[in-house]
Image (cartoon, rainbow, N blue to C red):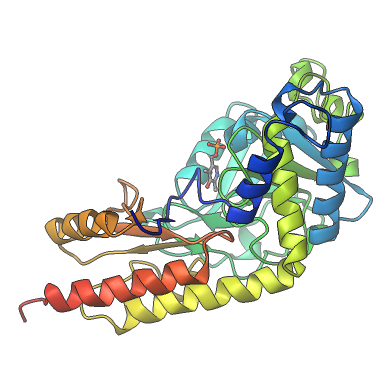
Length: 363
Ligand SMILES: *Cc1c(COP(=O)(O)O)cnc(C)c1O
């Protein structure tokens, strides 16, 4: 079989150079005679790995010293609970913007701890856009303001971050972290599961402003308290060592490519190629509002279920893998994270044009 391009929403494509390096180091990590999986998490090799990973992430995201970085288990989904347990502590109240399945799950979890005010929602239109926000609807006394910056399933993405005054913004960036530079100082907490744009499943990254650590009450389980994790540098217990190692290699890969400015430029070019193809097509269309289009996840449909299925099947045979859309949206979805090369999108677009010619709609 020829070249494979993996358009999976997650776990997703990783940079070939990173996988190659990991393969080279698999049996003998830097002369230790052991694989990273076999190293003590307290030993000097692994301590070096986690410290380097954090330092490189801090450098590429320009994270200032008043933010702590954690490498945690439980995926992004455990953060749906850890956020309210740790932050809904003053007024037991938080504002949430409802933009899809992931905000829905986060809202359900937060309701177990306190009061949730849904300031805006695009649910009525199957989450095809990021709703306009009216600051008059924000709670002045919210403990935090919660958004999902990129909605993986629906392919929508915030283009500007809301202004919330003194209320800290908590952002689920699972599917667009590291896709472009962000001003970390605008956020109280940024978190992301690794398996979209960072590395293998098994680790979640949490970046938190220092003053938001240590607010959980003592009934919160030890491991779920951010203070435990910060005080112990994510090593209160055994961390997901191998996932952290690969994440560190991905951070270095980003740095070597010129950092997030270069990555963002490349992502914009890649997304433009695909959206241009969809916009020029008489067969394919995007269900997403133009202004909310994600650069990472691109859903598209033919409007005919059978034709969608045929496209996905034929694409698969040609090496374009995992293009099936989420069951709640249908059609196709191309996830084009950092590690998807531009050639993959160019090849997909060539195939889409060919498919369109062979399957002309009867007018
Ligand atoms: C994938 C995803 C999640 C869930 O991640 P897990 O690590 O599986 O818990 C949460 N939020 C967003 C935006 C996602 O894309």
